[in-house]
Structure formats: structure tokens, C-alpha cells
Image 1 (tube, one colour):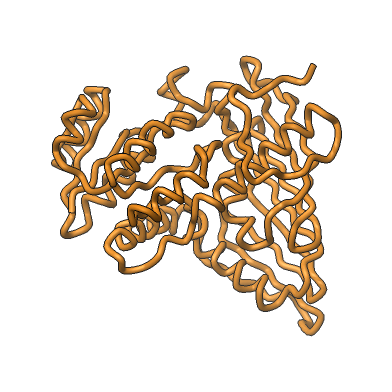
Image 2 (tube, one colour; image 1 turned 180 degrees about the horizontal axis):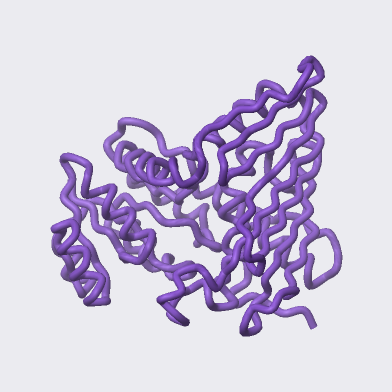
Length: 339
């Protein structure tokens, strides 16, 4: 099977490495940057292409699209038109999920939006514990802090996260919802804000905060900031059966129900020790799905729901009211400002 990798930045290089390790695959790379092509050819020995036309003439059966947020739409349409399976990295936009899924069904294609953290051991365990121990959900919260200037510092202004429209605090909202929604349920209504509170350069908002009313009952809260020098990614949830806390970075999970005399402490591996295995499992599941060996778990409809929740939060910021989640709506491009 021939797979064409589109883009070889940080995530694209990770995908190349994992695909290159799998027997039975022939992997090629399209990247307009000569330095990245040379690096990939030296490291992995893959075929490299500077022009998309030449890469397509090579005859791939599937595309792995690892280009920046907001750039994937044309590649998705190309894959559908040519009857190619495709995988895309997480994005702020879902590019019209209903149409993508309709054509994919008609042509029997695997169209696979990424949901990397659904393959993380602590997230898998959290879902199991929520289903078995939490009872009826009352509320959940997730807080994430990061420091954007530290992300790919050598790439300068070329890096997408240094632009307001694709800033990481905005990008990470649908990334987190892609695994939170399957566990806790979709939002039906959102109150949201995005503001600049820190001292980051430029005019980029550094903090997004969402309060959500959930279809499954209960409420959810999600706050992400990119101006904090300390990394933090923890959550908690409460139900009629008890409570659960988790830490994405340490892999810790704590469960306490009404019948527990003390909290049960579980650990599923620190992020640094399981991260690469997570990505390896994800991209290999995509390959398996194209060969009919197992289903792909993240549909475009699920990704669209995450994007629609972001769109509702941003409308709420502008209106000052709770806004309903319209499943067909995606975030504005560019991000609007509050007058």
C-alpha cells in the first residue's frame, strides 16, 4: 500500500516515522520546503516530491494530511475526488462534515479526522471509569495551561501557532473536545469568552473559557490558557456515584465512590513515556481501517460537533449570551473581535 504524507513539520515527521516502521507500506512525502524533504529522505529513505502533481502521479492510495490548521480543505476535497482514503490532523475547522461523510460512504473511503488523546491510556481508563463508577454526570471540568512562545521557538513567525486565527488556545479547544465529548456528552448550549490577560507579544488572545450545558445532563467547563510558564492539564468530574480526577501529564487517575473508604489511586503512565505509543497506535489504526481490519473511531460528525461548540462559544463572547450549538456551524475565519 502506498501512503502519501502531506507536510513534514513536527506532526508530519512523527507520522512519517511511524508509517515508515510498518511493514507492507511504501511511504512518500510532499513538502514544498527543500530542507524538510532532504531531512525526510536522509532519515527515512522515503520518496520525496516538491510538486503535488508529481506526488499524486506516484499513485498513493491514501493521504496523511499534516498541514497547519485552516489549510486542509483543498487536500480533503482532492482525496474525495480521487477516491483516496485520508487522515487529517486535529483542526479548528471540520470542512463540512456532512458532505465529506456522504462522499466517503458513496466511495467506500476511510475519512479519518485525528483524535489522538482517545488513544492515551489515562483517557481510555477515564472513559471506562465514568461509565462504570460515576453514575449520572453532574459536572466536569478541565483546565489546561501552556506557554505558547515555547512551542517550536526556532520556527519564528512561520509557525501557525504564532498567528491569532490559529493560536494554540483556540486550536486546543476542539482538540480537547474531541475526546471529552465521547466521554461526557456533547454540548447543547455554550457561554464562552476569549481574552488576552497575559503579556504575550502581538494581539493574540491567550485564554479561552467555555461553560457548557450537556446533552447527557449536567454541565462542563473547559479553560485553556497559553500565557502560563507552568504546564498543567488536569480535570475532575462528579456524578451521582462519586468523583474522578485525572492528570493528562502524569497519567494519574483517582476514583472515589460512595462505597470507597478512601480514594483509589491509579496510574497509566506519564505523558512522556506513552506519547509516542499513542501516536503510533493512532496512525496504525488508520492504516488498519483502510484495509478493513478495524473501524476508525473518530467520525467527521464528531469533529464537526467539537468545532460547532467552539463556534457557539465565540458567538457567545460577541453576544454576551448563552448560544445554542448548531452542529452544522463552524468557527469564523478569521476570528472576530468584540466591538
